[in-house]
Each structure stands twice: as structure tokens, then as C-alpha cells.
View 1 (spheres, rainbow, N blue to C red):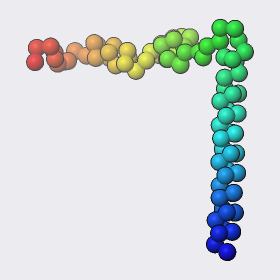
View 2 (cartoon, rainbow, N blue to C red):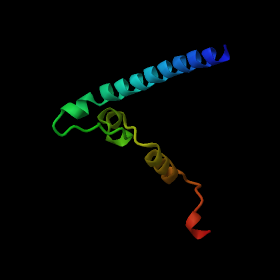
View 3 (cartoon, rainbow, N blue to C red):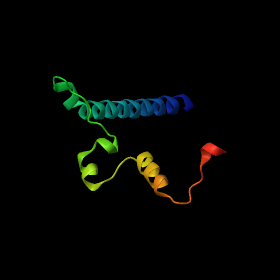
Length: 82
């Protein structure tokens, strides 16, 4: 009795696992179609500073914007003298 339940439960888990692996594989394949089919295919850069739309809005990466804001600060602490 218990063995039948365990076997049926294991079959259910196996089917779900196969389904999940299939969905993940299909998703990865669909995400990479352009890269795989194009001759010198590459993923476009995801870095903010290389995006034309962000450049038009004057948005840079967080590190660069932080550096610019700190440079403009009048009462900044000079950490080099510490």
C-alpha cells in the first residue's frame, strides 16, 4: 500500500521535473534565437552608459553619477589626507 503511494508520488515528481526542465530549455532556446541565427550574433550590451535612449536622457551608470555628484559637493571630505 505504502509502496504504491511512493511509486505514484515519484512518477508525479518525475513528470513535473521533466516539464520544468523542458520549459527552461525552451525559454533559453527562444531567448538565444537571434544570437544563434545571426552570423556574428551577440547579445546587446545591458550597460546603462551604452544605451542610446539613456544617453539622450542624460542618464549614466550609478557609479559615474555618484562620482559626478561627489565632485560637485562643496563641503566634501578629502580622504587622501586622512
